[in-house]
Length: 424
Ligand SMILES: Cc1ncc(COP(=O)(O)O)c(C=O)c1O
Image (cartoon, rainbow, N blue to C red):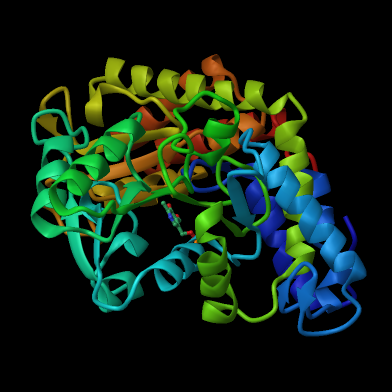
């Protein structure tokens, strides 16, 4: 890798590089990009201002910026098999949260009602949390999951839609391990239309599962939804960024929501890396990767269940495993998510504590862990390797206060990482 002449910054980068090489990334929203993707955002487009859109910019010198952005849009549509007769994609959002905000700004008025999944049930902050701009500027109504099986409560969704007349309904999540029935959202929008004479806009936020959808191992919302937002850096394995897809009728409003709504100049150097990442998704091998991500998550959930842990919903359909760490085989472990996260960090596994649905504990020390398999699958882990990781997680959590066991487990993780190095 290129070394900076600024030794101080280079040193910090080197330390992070060593950490990533010798530890496992199991934060469900993370991944390891390819060397091509990483190299692609270190380029001269970082020097360029290009406010506006291809063919309609506010500054000169845009010939190649336009070429780049049009190519990225084409690949962004191709990777989900979308035709530009029906769909438009804005590739400029700087990340997932601004993408969602731009949709709201473009399609809603302050005070309009949004129906989204509650954070505690697995939704995202931008789906209406009171401290997020979504919750500050809009009237938020939330739906959740059923108590008996922790699956989305579509009956609650329907009744809240019929009672509250939302202008926009969001489907999508940050911490939900199962399939979504996207068609049910569309049926619910039809019922609102039958009752009130207007159809709510359906927005899917596929930030987490975009790569799995592109790899055809997870259901797609595109046949049923009007707007689809995503990040590009989770299962999609691109640079940090966002995308907004919309039916053609919303193109002008979405574009206005992004610029001048919430952004100035797009980051065209990152857009170059998005194009490279989308090229990798389209290349054909990506579907094997997506399939392996899900296989690994299922193997992880199975092994942890076998060990006596309570895996929320009993398993997973995507890359996310939600684990209750407060009890094992029905007995209390004496720990919550805070100690569990710290313990696994000590042995070299990064993941995050997570509230579980109906959690009685506090967000800073909830009952759960969210574990993801997107990054370790990129590293080359197969189901056997991931079962071994499950064993190490189990041993660590059961010995959270035993430094000598934890230090042995740390060397196991280090050895494993050496067998599956990053490609840079
Ligand atoms: C469902 C969902 N939407 C939006 C976001 C926000 O993305 P970003 O962190 O890139 O702003 C996330 C991030 O985790 C997410 O999970």
